[in-house]
Amino acid sequence: MPSRDQSVTTIQRELTAFARRARAAAARMHPELSLVSFTLLSHMEDQQGCRATDLAAYYMLDKSTISRQIAALEKLGFIERRTDPADHRIQLLHLTAAGTEKLAEAAVLRRHAFHERLADWEEADLDRFAAYLLRYNSAAADFS
Figure 1 (cartoon, rainbow, N blue to C red):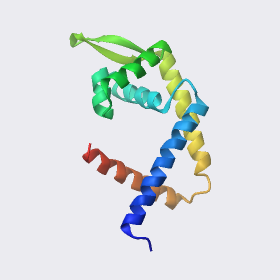
Figure 2 (cartoon, rainbow, N blue to C red):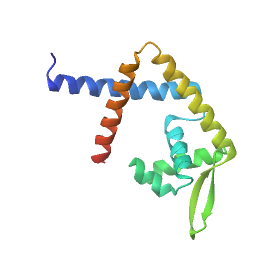
Figure 3 (cartoon, rainbow, N blue to C red):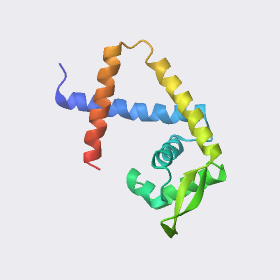
């Protein structure tokens, strides 16, 4: 049986490989929509609009990084700025119809890829894996 340190090393290595594969797969499936862009669009959709500073804070990214991503998404016509009705000084980012459509297309492709990748897994294994990911991400959020 591996030691705790060996297991943690394996987890770290495998999560890094997972992240690399996810970025590469995202680039192949929809070159104009990076994994970061997909994530930002998903967040904007979930929040029904948000400020750029909200995105930077939530994802712990530098404001300049978010600004570049937002500029690219605006150029593609996937998001637009709208004045916050509660405070006219604030600009909220919202998905456009094209952004909503692109996000839905990307989600279908990603879901299909996961179904293919996990097709031979037993239901109990999927349930355990899902529970472990939820537990890991919940604990990770506590350290943010």
